[in-house]
Image (tube, rainbow, N blue to C red; front, side, top):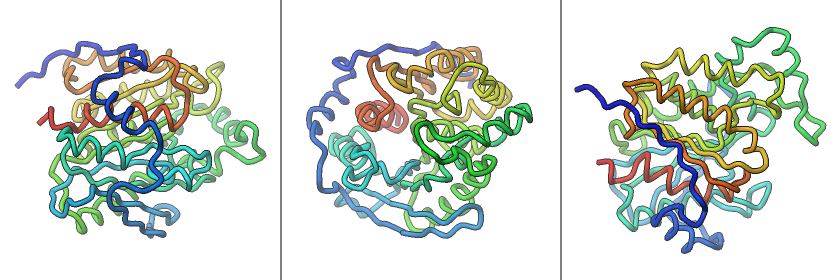
Length: 319
C-alpha cells in the first residue's frame, strides 16, 4: 500500500506547553529520585571482539516478569539512571520516565540497554564513519589533532570506528540480549543525544532491518564545535541523501534546543528536515522534528523531552 506523503512537522514548543503527558511526568519528577525505580542488572565488562569491553546496564520495570519487551538501546549509559554517579550530577531519569509511562499504560513493557561510553573513545565510537571517510584528507588530518574545548586531551584518539561500534551492538550485544530476554519482533529502538544522536541516525541507516525507530536528540551535526569552514554537516547530509530507501524503514524522532551548544544546530536540522520532507515514501506518521526554545545542551533538557520521544517512537497509541 502506498504511504502518504510527509507533512513536515517542525514545531516550536514552549516549555509550558510540552504536552499533557510530558507535563504530568515533569511535575511528578521535578526532583531527581535518589533511589532507582525498577530493576537494574549490570554487566561490568561486556566482552567484545569489535571494540573495547565496556559496562552495560540492563533496566526493566518493576514487577514485570514476562515479555516480550520492547528493546530500547541507549548510548552514554552512565548518564541514564542515577545522578550521583554522573560526571555533572545530572541524569536522564530514564527509569522514572519509563516507569511513569508504563504505569499510565502509555507504553508497553520496555527493556533498556544502556551502553556506557569510554570517555577517550566516545567521539571515535559515535562519529559516523562513512561520512568521515568521505571528507577531504587534509581536513581529516587536521581534526585528528583537535583537542576538546577547555581540556588538554584529544577529541579523537584515532579515526572514527563507529562501524565496529555498531557491529558490537547488532552482532554481539543484541543477540545476547535476545538470548536472555524475550524481545518483540520489530520492537527495537535506539535513542541518544549529541554525538549519541549522530550514532543513532547512523545505526538506523546502516542497519535498517534491525531498528524500528531512532530518537536523535540535540544531534551534533557539526561533528566538532564550529560551523564555519566545516564540511562535516554536508558530509552527513550527502550520506543521508544516499540512503533514502533505508530511511523509509525506520520511525524518526529529532529534536533540539537553541541555547549553548544547541545554538549551532538550527541550519543543519532544518536541512535534514527538508531532505526527509522531499521523500514521498516517508510518512508523516514516521517523522517528527521538534524545537524546545531555551533548552541547553544538558541532560536536564533531554530528560524533559524524553517522554515526547518515547511516546512518539514506541507508545501504545501507535499499536
